Image (cartoon, rainbow over all chains, first blue to last red; front, side, top):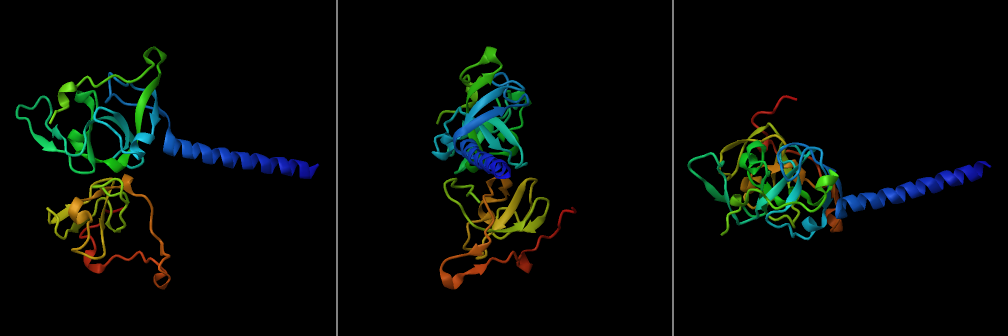
Length: 166
Length: 97
């Protein structure tokens, strides 16, 4: 009787470890579900929206200009931030705020990206902490699943004027 | 840690200063640097021949990958890596805990 219970326990533990490993690999290399908070990506992503993220783009280095990415915060490694990629390495970006009279530009250094939230008035992004190393990117958001009335692929940036063509 | 200049590459350096410390730099654009919050200052042991924070500045903690503890190969260099800060690279002012 006891041996039967013991066998069951070990089998259960075995399954837990197996599924735990698979889940970890899936979240690390494939992607997962993310709950976003904060106003910096409005109107594209509102507070408490739930989105799907995928990690394959960052492993294969095909993050494009205009993608929305989840990035480890440069100033707080324990938290993640969600922003749009405005410039890749070598691109020219506008570092001044839209309200400034004199516009300043700079080039994104090698191995870095320039991030901005869609809600330019209420977003701390690269305009505040500078270009972000590519190695901090955790994944790319490609699908919004909640709220259901806004289900679907994410819209293009409402701030097309921030993308400077070479 | 992942290299800030080339995300495909991992580099191995020594941690010289943590966030809040003020250190004197070797060949960096600013002579004295206060390490910002969430960042660290790394240097190679071979000063002058190392691509480290003296070239690319303080690195974000999120780029950290792992800590090197031992050298395994070649066998005649088998050793435990000592976490030792060279005395001439000590920070000028340590942030109070």
